Length: 73
Image (cartoon, rainbow, N blue to C red; front, side, top):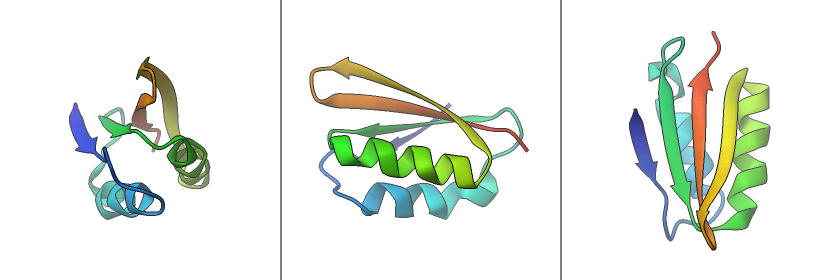
């Protein structure tokens, strides 16, 4: 699993960082985006929907989320 550390990054930086690797994601491969900004969650989920990527969001500690993104190509 490849991790994209976006702690401290505000929107739209996490989306831009995910967009930079979107073409590298192979079918079934997982990426984990870590963020501490709640607005990032809805932005990443919308991006995943547009690009046909599965996603799962989990708040691992108060105010820190891990978004697991899986290619569904």
